[in-house]
Amino acid sequence: MFTLIRPIAALMLGVFALYAAQIYEPLFDPEADLGSMPIWAAAISAVVGWGFLGGRIGRAMWYSAFVGVQAVVLAAICTAGFLAVGEVFTRGYRRQYTEVVEAITGYFGIVVDWLSRGLVQDYLILLGVGGLAIGALLHIVWGLMERRRNAR
Image 1 (cartoon, rainbow, N blue to C red):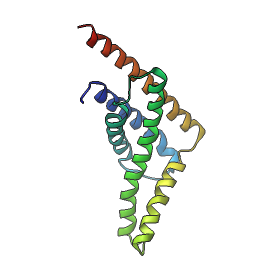
Image 2: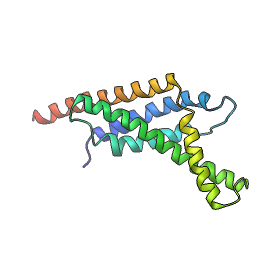
Image 3: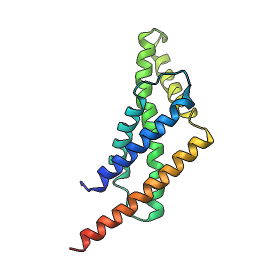
Image 4: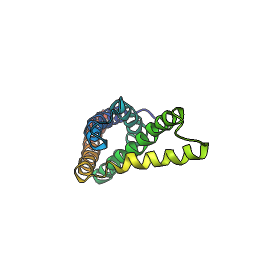
């Protein structure tokens, strides 16, 4: 069911992902050109915010904050998985893979590589605090909207 908290969750998680992706780029490799990775991260995170986060807000404050952290982790995994598909095709066109099985195992290697480069303490703190803040803010917004809806 459409509720107003879903687009708000999508917007908040998408904006946070755009910011976090720009912080991630220097962690990946200073000379690497990741292209439009921040835009893709924001778009994928907005989908996760709409589908996952927006539907789970409102039970309790601690639960909403916990779901906010889960949404950030899910958005990171989905973004890495999505962008790894493009990297596998790029490597395949450059004939770096000789067989299909090598491309499939290479896919999982790329996903693990993208995610493991973000395992820096400061970056993990940013993601954790951001997820907690998004969940708490969405819970407050949801509570205000529910109070207004029930006042009719």
